[in-house]
Image (cartoon, rainbow, N blue to C red):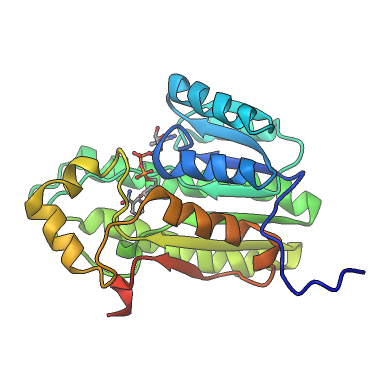
Length: 253
Ligand code: NAD
């Protein structure tokens, strides 16, 4: 028996499915989990982006399977995930942001954010949980946001979809615990990714966001993936039903 008191953040030999894995935070999670020893299944809508990530994963010595799919397409999700034999980790990350005031909000923006951020997250978690309950083990890490905890003007629907993720995380953590499955979330502040790059560099928007972050900087993708790998790993064996904020202190205020 080992004398070590240091719990492991390695996930050697495990299989991880990451949605929205083509770029940004999802790509970072896929590469970090591969570096931590997992074989990865990359899901996103854009095959060319997945090709690039898969090549990088293989260079790390792990296998990469690609699934080109829209997370809000229930039949496709069940079909694809149904063919996966074993799944240890789901990073439920795919999401979109369409900022708008309530008065200017279009039905298309409303429906798309609900479809991807809420419906998609549930459909993927449901299909993953079916495998994990059979196994009696697994971890689901959902991607929330600072705006899953705080409100934000001109982002009411996006913020509401992330509050949905918070409730979904807590409730599924309770429901799936008897099956040996943990469910947790990560709550990033503004992270510099393709989704946000232009907005963060717009002084009118970026300046206000920055002023709300006590640590005085925007997040990098590496800030988020550390939290995701921790939550997915044996080091977080008793962490469930909670959100790990990666927000430089924003929501502490
Ligand atoms: P991004 O736009 O850089 O990447 C999103 C990825 O999701 C892309 O690969 C895209 O193809 C994929 N995707 C989008 N819609 C999809 C769909 N319907 N089906 C399948 N794949 C789809 O975004 P990001 O900044 O990396 O954000 C990832 C997650 O982190 C999102 O849930 C977002 O809400 C959350 N988040 C981001 C920030 C930030 O500042 N970037 C902050 C807090 C939370």
